[in-house]
Length: 281
Ligand SMILES: Cc1cc2nc3c(=O)[nH]c(=O)nc-3n(C[C@H](O)[C@H](O)[C@H](O)COP(=O)(O)O)c2cc1C
Image (tube, rainbow, N blue to C red; front, side, top):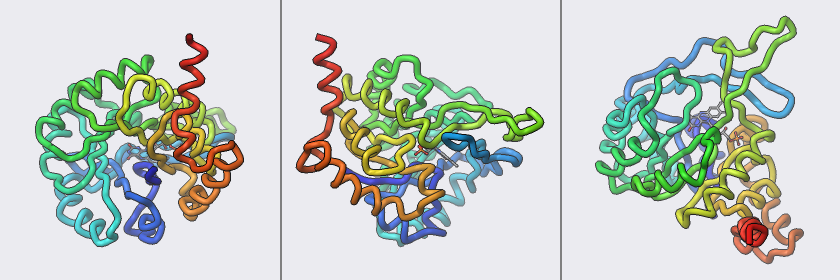
């Protein structure tokens, strides 16, 4: 099992020690052109999680490849580059310029207005131009996760990252939306059951690796994702509150596996999927 950060939740250049404590570092999504992102307010806390409408703020592909990527390589941690865009060819153009990294195709950013090409078209376009490992990052809004996963695997995905944020709104005391944009991406503890359901549905139809994420705060959360079929686990919102979470979650994961009756966390892989299959029979 690899422990990663979730895209957009850790700046490796300002927190190199945290990034180096992970098995791989995932960048914030990179788009072809620089993006300032949305106007503030872009972050709001809610009772059970956090809303963000950052809007893919990033320096753009050229600056990323020329300036950011060489500095990230100095961290000596395997790199995953999250690639975004607004049409399949835009994603593919970025993928074609990346060697030596795992590519996570962000198919699911809820904070931009432009309607993307279909997820499978985007993955197919990327597959054509790169032999690098290609992970498809999917939205929890997918109505039929099994169908989505099958289509993305057929299009050439090597693995899945799931899930991205859910769309949400929070109001202030005057009943206006807290975020300037209105809605934003909802992340944190409330997302865990959604992430578990997505991973479990995916694991029933694919044998490809899955990076599970959504509301992981402790070792038990990570173990539950593994039990639903996650091969790897990523930490997102928790990193804002607890930058030391990677080491803590790994420690807790061992203890939680023992408590649940498994010698090692890996022994719990997919056990919840089996339970569902048995119920269905
Ligand atoms: C502030 C913030 C920025 C994010 N930026 C990105 C991004 O650039 N690309 C992406 O694929 N996901 C992005 N995400 C989504 C996370 O990678 C992750 O899928 C989501 O937050 C669920 O995990 P969590 O509940 O552990 O945070 C962002 C999330 C947050 C909170």
